[in-house]
Amino acid sequence: MQVPNYRQLLQRTDGPPGSSWGLFGKNSQLGTLNFITQEITAAATRLVQSGRTINLDYPINAFVPSIAGTRPPTEHRIFSNNPNHRDDWLDSFYLQSTSQIDGLRHMRHPVHGFYDFVGDDDVRADSPAIGIQGVSEKGVLGRGVLIDLPRYYAAIGRSDWSNDTNFMVTPDDLLNAAAAVGIEFQSGDILVVNTDWAADYLALDEDGRAFRREHWGSPGLEQSDAMVEFLWDTQFSMVVSDNAGVEAFPVNQASGWIDPDESGPALGPSHNGMLHRPLIALLGMFLGECWKLDELVEACAEDGRYEFLLAAKPLNVVGGVGSPPNAMAVK
Image (cartoon, rainbow, N blue to C red):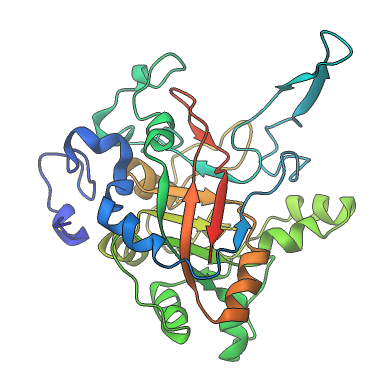
């Protein structure tokens, strides 16, 4: 697909600089998922060799208490109309409380607003505008490429990698880690970044998790213009990680993105200076957070193949902000 590069997008005068608004025409509700063409999906199916399927979702309530501090546990209830019948429902089911896909409603740019000229009044429960149902209807079926950062950094002798600090992953890190396992990025790829953060966090006891939430630190993608340019120009359709936000946290103080006059929220983490804003609100790039990658990491290390068919089918919630991914890798 022929699209302007990021530096060309920065020169736009018919939309916010650095945005893809209007670029995909009537399919703009899919943002960067438009990079996954039918031809790319067909090619991805040819990556399947053994047929091994790997679950990429953590269970509902895996991250309880809530990492964000604003989502109560989901309550699963079962009822019966007669002795031979069972049915069930969920109470307090927050669609982004465990493994998730952040949809295009998830983040508003503080200056330009929601993706693709969608007005604030259109982002409501009874409106479909840029809702997650668009992703459900299309589905995500393409080539996944795994970047296993802990294994890569260990191989090159980086001793400063840490799972509880905001270690910032650069575009060069991603390119070099990919090259080390023979991966060349292609248009439409689903970038899957393993940090071991989720597995490490979930292995902690209750006190350990509470301490980690109080002294928050997570490795991830750096907040920088160079990272935004790299992700767009490579034409990733989606960026997925096992950590809680894809990007490093706390944010990069040297990014130039932090607004000193923006007040902090009453609840939950601040988004001031985050990658989420340019990626989701300006470029229409979907993000996957808290994905379960431990089995996939081991499978790729065993067979030496770091590319695979990736399938995800979010819930068909009209106007939804996000959803569990319902994701599988097939090798």
